[in-house]
Image (cartoon, rainbow, N blue to C red; front, side, top):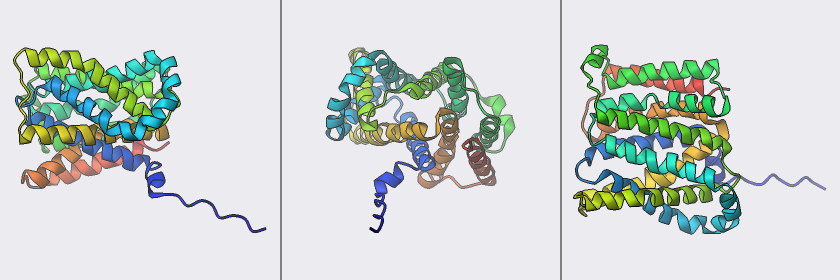
Length: 304
């Protein structure tokens, strides 16, 4: 008998096993979310944006997740406290704090604060589970953070002296600390289908933000349904929510949180690329130097 040929891998199957590609796309989608969140500050109420984002993401995922949700429901119910914590840290609290913070801070401050994301993840994996950074991961974070600073400061380190800290900065840093808890807790996620995990936690995020959103709307911050609002909500529901969290969770499952976290340093890289592409900014030498450092740091940190 001739041996049977191995089954052919589908494109989706191949894609789902490419952690570097998945995490890079995650950073791209989240970079767009930061740019958009700052752009619509004062136009779309921040808590309502977070709430509608998770409601929309849940209903987008539901047709694909329904069968898996029914199968995995006993697992979710048995680990309800962990699932609630994942929904709170990864979906409700961190997005509300981030959107609130973007109402008050400069884009430069926001990008600088985002660059500390990998350190927040490393801190919580150490505190909660005793997982230490390897030398390569620490070196990669330092190298990529240097690249981030060069891009954000446009090659001028003296710009650090002009940065003013405000309450928006504190909110954004708090959001990163909360998201670091989510990233670390993903090490203890229940064994379920990935799409049912995302659907359950997006539903949890929507439920947890809904009371605060109702309070916000009743306090004099109405949601105006114009073209800007509708496009903002559509982007927020699809790319940084449904897709990015699927990709991020899968990336963590494949290479772990400490190796995945340095990919967050790609966010300011993508942010500057978006500014060049859509806002007419001109590429400069500091962009190239920063890109090389960030990509080198991510490559170093993602090695075993």
